[in-house]
Image (tube, rainbow, N blue to C red; front, side):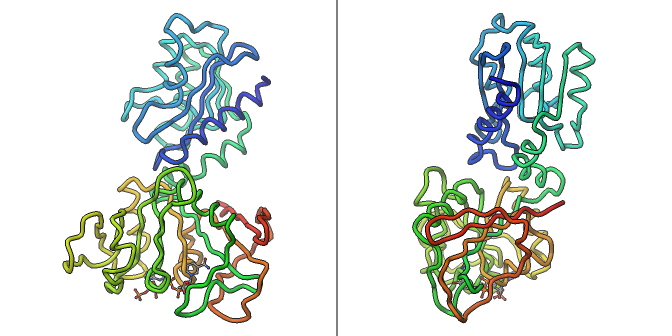
Length: 341
Ligand SMILES: NC(=O)c1ccc[n+]([C@@H]2O[C@H](COP(=O)([O-])OP(=O)(O)OC[C@H]3O[C@@H](n4cnc5c(N)ncnc54)[C@H](OP(=O)(O)O)[C@@H]3O)[C@@H](O)[C@H]2O)c1
């Protein structure tokens, strides 16, 4: 396997952890001797062993060799946090060659681990397939530099630019894109919706169509408008209501976070980040999406465009989609736009 392919394999391994890494990065690691892969690993679970540890755990201490090379999608850590520093593991296993894609954006690390390993005689290279590595690491970059969840704005719109009709639930996506949305949900720690969407659509906001977990529902409800009979307050799944504490029921899996004014959304996101929400899918409606777009509270937009027209209704948020990637799923087109930073 060529060096590029070995790093690509690290990216693939890293993605296997994307449903459970929360505010931590997706990381993949691979140990090879020449073109021969000897061991692989990835960051499987928030708080669990790092990718390097997972990779090397399948080999005995004496099985590593000076000719081995460790590929990792992100610079190994050198800080004692939830787990011991991977720098020390690399040294104790006498690995003499290290290649990483991305230098850790965490200001506590930021190249210092590579420097320390070099000083200890390890040949270190960084920047292999850096752009791909950066794309993989976007959520972690937001996490570490902005201390808020990575925000994915998602909506479905008709060909002529409407997302719904006032007071009615309208179906725009098709069966394939419905499943795709559930895949996105499974990779998110939370789904956020505005009050009107929760009221009018009475959505379940869970993951029923893809393997993996259902995220926490995060409902903006600063005036306690959501009826107790609505799914988000009644079906036993976890919900966070952003608004005043309610006492009209014994809430079992519902918690409350203070939220009063629209301007407080940044503060609310900071609170959700402290609760280990690394990625939030914002599923509308138009007013909430527009607020996020206007205030720069977004990292990615994923837009489902149906080939049917609605002629009137609630206008979809306006955004320049010239640089969006595009995929076709039956009669739906999916557009993805990354926020430049
Ligand atoms: N096609 C799609 O993808 C899609 C997705 C979702 C919804 N929809 C449709 O869209 C409609 C609802 O959309 P909508 O635009 O009327 O309402 P919305 O965005 O769901 O909710 C807006 C309301 O949320 C509350 N809110 C609290 N903080 C806010 C903030 N920072 N920014 C914006 N709103 C905040 C406000 O209510 P208070 O003043 O009461 O606090 C506001 O009026 C529904 O008919 C639904 O079917 C379509």
